[in-house]
Length: 264
Length: 323
Image 1 (tube, rainbow over the protein chains, first blue to last red):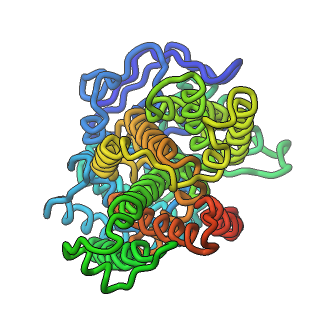
Image 2: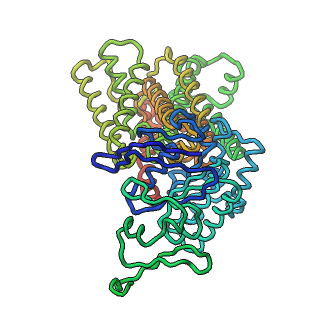
């Protein structure tokens, strides 16, 4: 579906580097990209999304070189959910979600009945239909996240890339958002999401890609990847145990403050 | 949204007609409203030469220049993703004025092309200065704009002092003036304005998406580099043509889009054309005040727009900071 082959990329002077980096996102993947700060997760995602150029090697979407693709064509394959920010201008929720239809309309953005239906359905799905006339800037952090995901859903692409959609959400909104993502995956979408929550990643995703210092340190099912040894190696932490959740059988990490000597 | 836009545009249209009648009958010779209506109905008696050859062209130019500046302001605020900018604050007007003034000194005929060159150069410089690793820095943008604007204003005064006192009226370039427009430019100006306006409306939805973030816009299918370049060029042309006609008139491009957005919302497919209409109305009213307030003396129109614009800017500052 999406393939990065032997990517080389340098950011800034003496900055972050990717060297000979390869990754494949397969159709139907429900995958999390995790790792310490500065590991290169966002850079990899932005290359996958066609945002960041200036790399060597090849990034392909459905077998076509992304650099040679028209952005509107690429946008029908891949959607990207950024971390939410305030906007300079007061667009309504409906206007924001409607922007997701840009790959399907011309530059004037005249929407057909089909486009309207897709926008309404996406707003309905994410509980925004009654708030569609509200200003995006006036929404809470969680609602903003939902609006941006609704925009990506209205975009109707087969792959969704998300940059930490759960960050700074309370647990209620995290749970709600993850259930929505599971629904999107069940409906046939390929999802790749950056996440810092190891337990959340383990519980919800089928595939976990752990990055460190610009390389993939582990890639596989949660049971394969979320192990004491790997977490020690990748995050450099000591005071924790990994136990399986008795209800789901998935590995979870438990931090143990100040009891290093008591751990077996 | 469409309804709000139509209602707003229609209301501005009505106000514009009223203002045109006011502008036609006010001045050193006053006409009554019935005389003006008779003139508009085809009567050619009395002081019609004043109306045909003095007031009407001036009214048309005031509307054209105001429309272009309002439109340029709406575009610049969108491309810079900042509601505090306009062609004047970003220094683009002064750059265009310097281009035109330099052309006069150099003996080049035609002011529009050199003004466009000056505007493009300024956009390039200001944009380069305000771009940092992490994106566009608003503080740098505003500072660079003001500094470069001052620099070009100084250069205009400098070449005026060194080369000639007659060719360039400094006040014209620095404060704007609609009393001296060369009617030969009318055709070019109208064509350039309409072509720019049409292009600006055609791609306005892509510009909407662009304002929500350049990176996201790409992933929504917008050719961001093209949109950015196109709109910088359109803003440059609109500003430069207005400056070549009437000098540097500040703050029209700041005030007009703000007021328009209050009524139409932020969608640029509405904001851009309505800003053209509202800019026409605003500058026509300002110019009519400028030439009738202290008869027989005439103020440069930039005095009126500056007196309105600076308090407006200061009132906006805290609200923008909070956002």
